[in-house]
Image 1 (cartoon, rainbow, N blue to C red):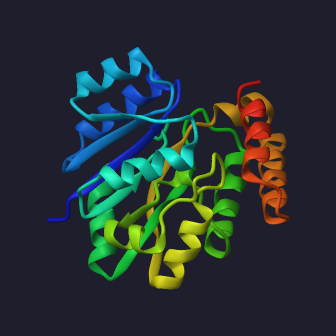
Image 2: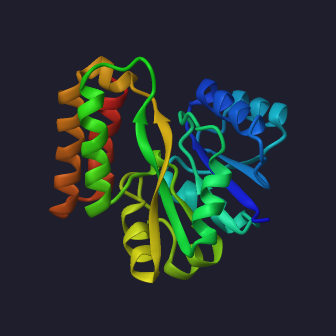
Length: 229
């Protein structure tokens, strides 16, 4: 049986983190270990980690660095990176294990919006799936990768945004990086609040600017100002 190390970066996401940890603890097959990387050094986060008996590491508030630090501490066969607001499918560990047994080095889950859903979700979800086939799936899709391969190709970039881009490109060059049919449900509240098309356009502008060479640190300030507005 493969041992899965779950890595969850957290920054003032305590309520969402508690919901995710409850989901993980109720899965038919339990992860080998769960590592929460707390970038806020929050007492509330510490208490939640004690409650669910998971490993907590304190880090600076930079998602790429958070993920890299946890990956160096993890001891499982496979690293599974989750955002704190993720909502899981019924048996995600079995889906990942099946893909890895068929020769994949890693992969990602199908993007689906969590409820409440509006009609634009039905257009955006297949568009995101198409983008992921030809571009890069982002961290909210539950990227997983064999731990030895992760370290071999250099891991996440130490950036606050788009930190998964070099990782995904490198693992695709090394072998099979596959999309799973099983979904991960992504919190839709930002899209509900900002407008489905406005939020999508904002995200695409960030990605286009990143492709043009704008520094991730500069783009992160725009992303978080929009996210927290």
